[in-house]
Each structure stands twice: as structure tokens, then as C-alpha cells.
Image (cartoon, rainbow, N blue to C red; front, side, top):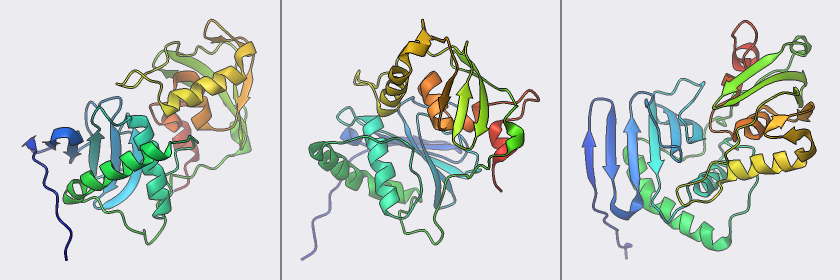
Length: 260
């Protein structure tokens, strides 16, 4: 006996660049054939090249892998967007993708069941727009960046969302943020009014270095382990950190170090 199918009513609209599906209590799905000009700060993005997933982002559609199309999930109010994003990265990791976002968090068993049920409901719609969750023939990995000793003396500047800093990449896993860096003061909240996982991670990093911060300004140098930690510490993430670090010549750290 075949299982019963579930039908969901929806409304929508489309243009030559975007299709929007508003699916009752399942939130909103947007498909883009070009990079979106503006995004919801709690949107979950799949970046695709044709039908292959080449990246996932939370709150932005930045990518250095030249996607051909984008899928945006705006979750309903009963879903915590940041937690669901982390849930999805774990789901895709189990399917053979390498999309880990470098954060570690715990989601309760009860919440996991809610997210699994929600994912099961919206997946057919996402598949209709070309999303395929399959074991990739070749593991889809994040871009690799290669450290070079010649970078150790380069003062990379950050100027993003109110944060300004000078950063040196001194060793493969050591990034020095110089004294005088300004930190984003206001902790971003989700639509539900709670602190998301990226912000929690940023607050934890700040707590670890609380004696070196005064009035949201760094009063002595600190050393962090990754570009991700640098961005989360300074401005609570929300963008591709490799694109925010710029050399005196204006080249991004990504341009100087990405392995092609």
C-alpha cells in the first residue's frame, strides 16, 4: 500500500529573474537565476551550479564559486532560522557534502524532530527548482586557501558593518587582530528575539578575551585561529570573511590565497 501524499496550498509570483512561492505555514521559497540584490538577514541560501550544490550561507548570498542559480528559504515563525541552518549543514555533511560552517552547537532532540519534519515537507518543492541531495561524485568542498609566509607582514584591513580592524595572518592557524580594532556593539537577534548560533559563538569569543576589550574596542592584540573566528569576533559573521580582509593594494585575502 502506497503512503498517502500530502498537499500544501501556496501562492506565488515570478519574473525573468525570480520565482517566489509562499507556502502557507511552511514559509517562503525564492528561486533566483541571478544573484539576489537584497536578502533577509535570516534567510538560508543554497548556491547551485546547475543542479550541484556548491555552497550554503545564512543571511547572505555571497559566494566565490560562481553559482548559476540560488534557492532561498525564509522559514516560518515556529522554526529558529539559525538552528535550522546548522541542522541542514549536518544533514548535508552526512550525505557526503563538505559544507561545515565551523560552528558547534547542540540542538535538542525535540527541535531536531521539528526540523526533520519541516525539511521533509519543503524538500519536494526545492527539488522542483533543481535541488538534488545526492552523494556527490566528488565531495563538494569549501574553497581551500593556502598560507604563505610572505603574508605574515601584510596588514589586512577590515571595514564591515561598523567594525574596523587590522589583521595579520602570521601562521596557518594564527590570525592576529591588532589593538585598536572596533567591534560591532549590538548583538544581532533572530526574528524570534533570541541570539542565533553565530552571535552566540561571537559572544563566547569575546568573553574569552574580555580583559582585552574596553567599550567595544580592542585594547591589546589578540590571536584567533581562523578567518571565521576573526569575522565572528569582530562583527558576528554574516558575510564571507575571506572577502572582507583586504591588502594595502585592495586585493582580498581570498584573491591572494585561494587554491584554484
